[in-house]
Image (cartoon, rainbow, N blue to C red; front, side):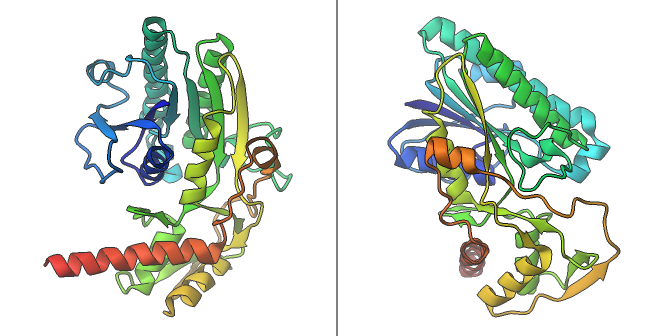
Length: 323
């Protein structure tokens, strides 16, 4: 299949790009203009454009006609979204509308209605009482990030209803770990932050309250395989929504213990006042297992941490060697 991956320069987008290429697909990787591009698998075409700039997207020929699109380009930080909701809606919603408009043009020219696999988030659920969370849970996002992703979901589902695309929404929980050359370096997230303490680059890890809040983590390689499986999940005119998770939650303290266990190094902890956050967020992922055969076999906390640690130490070794 001819597959476009947006947000390909990101942590998950890079892993998805290489996974699709390894499966034999002809992949075009869209990266934001001016952003550095990670190395991709041989044969991947790289084009640069910003989703909010329609003219740039035209110049990148996104209307050429694709069989499928994995749409991962988005802004994703919850706290940041509270301070800049306009930017989050511009990128996550208007950017998605721009993409769909060019795909529609490509369909008219090439006669191919693509499957659009949208990367979404558990944040659309807000703070539901039912755990684990099934896809039937009414969305109730509590911040601009979640609200903008829900709006993007609704946009692709409504576009699918016209017959112009097929739509698959993948609601991920916490994607982590590393896959090949693609590792998570964002220290606003728990595992990179904890590893930074283990390596001595940071002095301590701040724990809100007693660190008992429960979250679940999905290995980035398993997440990439969910995108691969989703390419054949629907026909044009149809849409499906899937949670992607393990159903197995771990606490913040569990994650820090796993980092110490895997690395053999202490993670100094500084306890802060409790934060206003959901005590538990865990996915009910039975639908994706039953319908797409997705398993998530790598998504144990020790495997996730071990792969992230291997990537971090390899990167540090390469940096030291190059000096």
